[in-house]
Image (cartoon, rainbow, N blue to C red; front, top):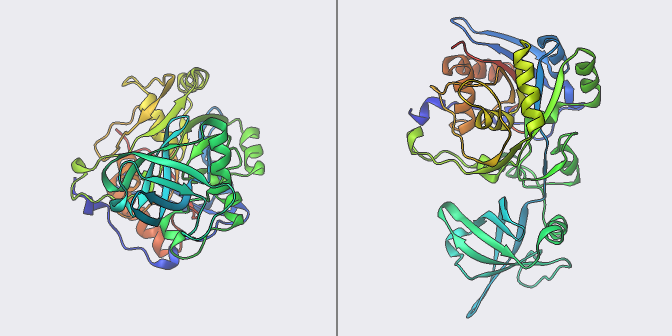
Length: 362
């Protein structure tokens, strides 16, 4: 499909730079597809009103790490050069794939000393890595001198939260972001970006969902920096998704299958949990235990196997996530929903408002 079908104009005023406070006071647009799509304005704390006893919410429990690293590139016969790297997927205890800038000037064999801001400043906790491979679009493979928990600790000390570009371009990251850009149930470290639909949940909302008989289940998909990358191709067939590591336990798979068998619905909180559940599901709709890297790319025409509803924020124009929600609820439905959201002042992107999408009838 043509990528420009998923384009739209968004005023800067609609881009959220801070989350709603309290989190569950964010707006919620409930979208039901059909010949005449139903669009209803609510707030996130109303979510319980649109679910039924026996439904199951599926959350991504990944935890954001301070994966944005600044440092100095060292090369024999050349002076130091300032570089930045955004870690996006761990492949070994001491190896990360990353997006580096300026990518064109980095070569295999370069040594990078992270934890430095310029060539004349040495900071405590500096971290050394060697460039082992170089790919397209500034992607590099970094082998660090430290490994395992020692590397984790060094990254925590040297890195900072990689805010999405549309926020970072308007303000710097601060200490509040370390709290705001993390779900209250985050526990499995490894994500570069937050599963932002989950940012709206509070202990009070969890208590209300529990009282209403709504189940909660957790999966893990470590969101990579590729989620921030624009689709540069003119046609969706020419776009390559970056891989992300995910896990669905046998216990969670059985619980979700039991939900469906009882007539309940699987409600994914965020596109990350949806992509993982659909990766783990077979064509008959059963969810299986799964632990692997997924590069699933969902566009209109995709037949959803397991997921019934999707709670998700409002996404970037021409992004893979805009394509995913258009596949889920229908392109025309989402075009109308986004036009309504813009006209009525919904806040977009990571810190913005949310939507609850019903799946388009098969």
